[in-house]
Every structure is written in structure tokens, then in C-alpha cells.
Image 1: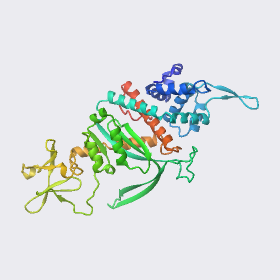
Image 2: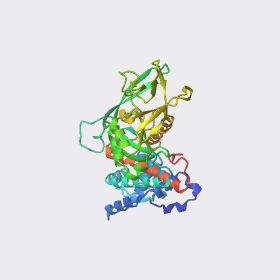
Image 3: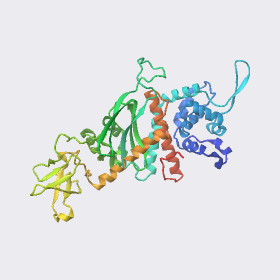
Image 4: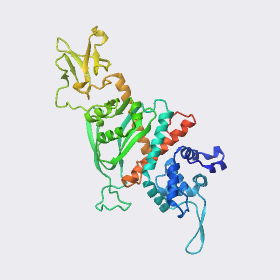
Length: 424
């Protein structure tokens, strides 16, 4: 926690948006990071103390400055922000012998500070996990319903450079990927569009109720989502995995290996399913019975006339790991049919795909789309100037730290509504 003593010189009603920065600074567990950076600086130049640079760097996220130049302009213009950050006006003697005031650090000073932070990404990761742990302690039901998704973040560079030597200007780590989008026209025709991206992919797990991040990994754009998803799940602490009941994802994550990984943790996957029967018939027979089923889990009873009668889901039988189905009331038939999940675990989910419960839970998946939208809109990832995987990872981490720190301060103030919506 990095308390700001200077705020006492302002009246609360004069602080305005500066109160947001105050909230974030008071909530962040940044003591170890500041102490280490100060220790590394030692007796070197201290024109701008570490804590002032850290506060200003955080301010660029809180106040949505797209570039360092924009932050410096704001620092020069806003004396209250300089006070909050701890900057003192310096008098500089020029080469011609005259004097001028320097109100804020230079771009070079901020560039050096960012390079120092890149060397301590591990400490920032620790801060992230500490804040996530506090969410688990402070919020009822936090972590019970998780959502998983991947998000493309284009590099500021337009493509790979033939010169692979790093110089801070070119992006030598990003790569290309192609995303396919299928839309339906008003006439019902499905149209598939492809778009090529150069950059990175953010793989993210959030709490679907409070819309706050729990785990993430940044990779090159071409790295597959299901593969990284398994790593993310394995990286979650056992306590967090035990508290999770459902994991939501779109059909891009549909696949046996990932489903097995999720279910091995006693978590029920709520994942949309791909149609892999396009070259086959619409239904298949279930074993040697009068039951048939579709690729997305609808079950039918074939009567003596050969007509398919839709059955309704009656619940999951944990003793036999099977789904129970029966007739609708108008058929006046009380028979119950059990379908073993072992026949096709993708189709026969523990929560049946055609059940109201599955549909209700799957709707919560939109939470992660809103979080991705906030990264673009509130943290300006749709118009950034970032090149390089390490720097991109740093800025993603900082965005999540600000998001969680603001949520923590709202919890401390007992303001639990819209913990995720910190931008006015």
C-alpha cells in the first residue's frame, strides 16, 4: 500500500478524478516492488524518486493516457496531479547558462523506468495474485463460475521486420494468425469472413459474476486457445479450483482433452459444441435402443411408427454418470431413460446441453466479452503504441492491477455495485 500524504492539502470535493488514483495507490500491495527498485537505485541519481515514477506510471492507466507524451503533458498542466505523484518542480540550468523550470520527467526517464519494471515482472505477477486472493476472501461466491476466452491484441508494428535484432522499435516476437467470423444475414444465409492479425493473444480467465480477472497468459497470436487454456487451469491454485463449479467458454474451446482436464478438477464445463456431423445424418442411434440424439445433445424416442419424440432432461445421475431423460407430460408416459456419458462426453455434458440450466449458465459467458471490451475501451488496447511481448505483457498486467485495486477499494468502502466499472 502506497499512501499519499500530499492529499491532505486538498479538500475532498476538489480532488475529482484524482480520488481514483488515490484509491488505486492505497489498494495496491506494492511495498516490495518499491523497496527493491529503491535498493537497486542505491546512491545513484534521484532526480525523480522511484515512488513518484511509479505513481505517474499508474496515473497513465487510471486517466487513460494513450502515450507517455500525453502523460507528460498532463503532468505539466495539472499541478494537483504532480502533487499526488510527489513531483517537485526542478530548476534546470541550460547549456547557455539560463535557467528553466522542469515540471515533469522526460520521455527518456519514463522509458528507463519501464525497462526497470520489465526486469521485475515477477513481482507484478505476485501483486496480481495477492489481489485475486483478496477477492476470494472478500466477495461471496467469487470464483464459483469462471469464464474463459482468448483476445487478439494487434501489435503496433504492422508486420514482422526482416531485421530480427531487438532495438526497442521493431516487434520481433509477434506473429500472424487468422480469425474466422461467421455471421448470418437477414435472409438467413451464413457468411464467413476471415481477418489476418499480427500481434499477440491474451488468454484470460475471469469470475463471471463480478467480471474480474483470475488468471491470464499472453502469447503470440498463433498459439491455440485450448492448449493455453489447459496451462491456465493447471496454474490455478488448488483452493481456487475447488471453489469453482462451472467453467464457461465458447465453441473454440470444444475438444476432448480440454474437457477431460476440466472435469478431472471436478468442474463442470459449460462450453458450446462444434458440429462435427455435417457430413453425417442429423441424428445417431444411442446403443441398441429406441433413442436417438443430435450433435448438440437433443435426445429423442423413436416410437412404433418411426416418429422421433423429443424427450426432456430430468437431471444428472452421479451414481452412474448418466443423464436422465423422460417424456413431456402430455404423453402420459413415466418411463425414464438413462444415457451413459461415457458414450460421448462432449455431447452428453453433465449439465445437459438442451437444458434451461445450461442455457442460463452459458449466457453468463458474455461477462468475459465485457472485460475484453473494457481492456480495449478503458485501457486503450485498441489504440496502443506497444511493441514487443514483454512490454505488452507488462501493460496487460498493469491494466489488471488497476482493475483489481479499484475493486478492492470499493469493497473496503462497502460499495459493491459495479466493481468492474471504474471509468466514469
